[in-house]
Image (cartoon, rainbow, N blue to C red; front, side):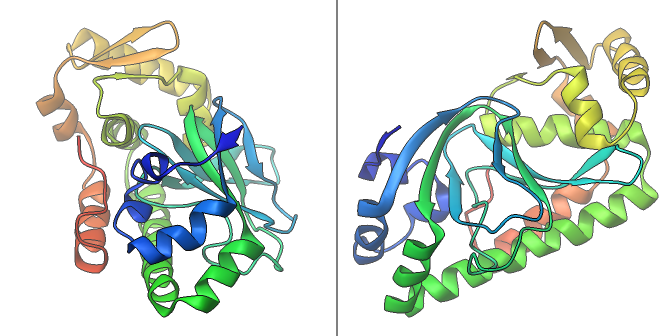
Length: 243
């Protein structure tokens, strides 16, 4: 863990467009951490004491665990956003567990320090409120996606989400991670990826999925990601990550 720099803030789109005054309000309170996949940022039921901003190709997810023990990811957060006390003020327990899905650098700030900065700057308050709207839209869209789209479509959507966050056709994502993100058994994921591999769409390597035919992969995916991109563009123009 090291003190965050101005260069670090530029790696998160939500922070990169802030005014110099607002960035200076946040910077002294921020630290940069390199976190591995599956690291827990906050646990369901615990107070949100820290807020995390993914940088560059890092990505986290909000995960809900059901009564049967299976979990499903309901929203992804990459360099376009933040995880933690953006929505609440850190005094309310988190409803979902926040987990790292793609390793990388995360900027951490105490939620209390973030709240103080928001009290000092109406621009910060409005900016993060607009991001909260976009995050909620993603949760709504995920609920609709899980109810109406096939596992194959959802797998394609998740691989594209990885491409958007990393900007790389080689995505650090395993079949086990895909299964956890979707809330389905690994056998479903393995069978579908096997078909995609035969069609020349993707290739599986140790701990990595490689996109071989981006056009075909987009054709396999549902249109949920596009709907979220459109909403981000309307509310926070230029923030949503594109490869």
